[in-house]
Length: 349
Image (cartoon, rainbow, N blue to C red; front, side, top):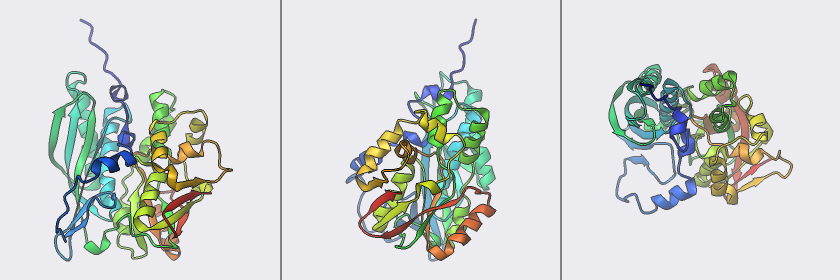
């Protein structure tokens, strides 16, 4: 009897990575009136600002950070899929200025389609990243699903004064990005079997690099706001910061770092469908300089998976923040723009 070939993981899902996210404008409609309003004075961060995680004050010295993130495969190697998904989930705790404590696995797999060893490799990959972060996967939940899904629910901790929200940026702050962009475009090239081994390794290195500097950045008073750049793209997550903080932002396109090969793939028309979705959600509040390259809109709306930290800090602290990032091997960290007073809007020049 001839056994059926094992399908590519990315062939089993309609989307991959953080590109699976529901569009931000649609999500806002779905969430309307969906969360209870009550007297919760110790809930420091809830759903109001579309932040990366919820934060609950336990006492004057400790705040609990809770988040969950899961998605469908962005790569075909099952262990790499698990590693990327775990790093992406842990990032939300770091983006709040905290350190993760433990995680629970969220697993949905097509049991009749994928053999046990493939599913096990996904779990092993996720566990290896949690081990790197110094935390256990202490439990979880699994279902038999049509598409493969993996992620984590993560609990973390920080001093209440070290929590860094996405809506506390100040006029005059500069914007620093810790990782290069273009994960969505590289994943689209992979799905079309056009990504070289070198390109794949660059994407994997970026998406599995833990955003650990977030915990140290949270201790710096000069760091006023922080978030991570994921499925809503650089434009979408910067706009969230602008809207929450009541500020305008200007990004310098030529200052943006890109993963190898991204610009060429974009020029060749290789990108994800989530780019158009992201542009529809934010275009009313974005102005692109007329002389930008024709592919700029696609690049700026590219959905990131396990992307970098977007940091708003005082201008005189920019060198300190960049040095901190580069000492932790975020070699492509760059100052990409600034914030100023004005109605929430984003200009890219």
